Image 1 (cartoon, helix red, strand yellow):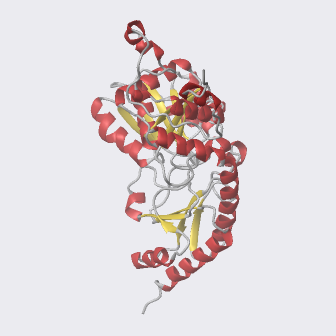
Image 2: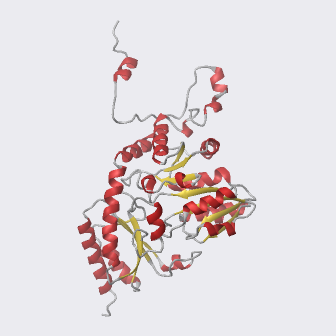
Image 3: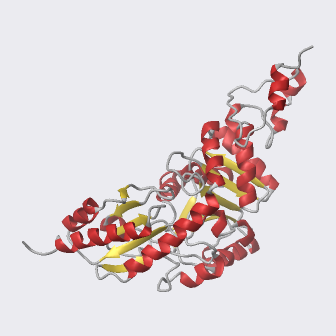
Length: 387
């Protein structure tokens, strides 16, 4: 009898690329398996919304990167943040959120959770053990991000997590800037280490995804259920893209970090740059914390230019040739973004009342990027000259 059957063909096939397994409906061998299907979670499969083997493979690889036991993926970095909060915070709880956290998380806390009876408090984004003064009997979770979104403030993560554990408070960290290669959040006491896989993990600006990593199995069980209830399904094709991105993660993070430090040091000396916001620079207020705890340079930083009219910023951005204007970061192409003065001044605990320019450094030749920025800064200076 021929052995050239579909089953034997599949068994004989091996590939370096993971299989992309699509499914909405999961089928069962018998009635009892179907009745008991919920018992398959959190690791097993009962319906497509909680993932297929393609998703589980990605979750396993991210958990390994994070030095964690478990991972749950979500359709975006924002979704990962919200899923984590929704899994554990309830009406009557007190939630501490860094004022430098991702804007959507702050908006979700202040515009949605607060209306559901959660007591939301923004805290100074450069805190450490002194956060204990803000913890109440009903404090449920502390939401951290370091460096902070846009203005790059550093928090003392180990000090905060030590206080939180003593007081029985959960901690979550948006660790996207450093990636798991740069900062081991779980090793530093964080309960939930969150990545916007859209950025470094995917690496090519073509996928949206978020990852939540943890060690505690009970937390994992809750988050898998939360993922299912909220319908936070992730496409297996997107999982494949991030799995592929992980293959070059170490190389990209190293190359982009090296170039970013080179570009940042050049800009720090430029006469049109008033202030750099980048912890790997010795002049940054958060440099000591970065040097103590972090292993990579990131690819993202911000800067404040010498004061100028709005037209000068138009000239700066319109003069860029190698930087693309866009709000994301972490991919192989360099990006530039603008955050107006009013947005900064209206923040809780503002780092500045001036406009902020944020740059993400990709894999282009750093000498070309520096020349591009020099031209744009010359245009910025020229636009300030009367006539």
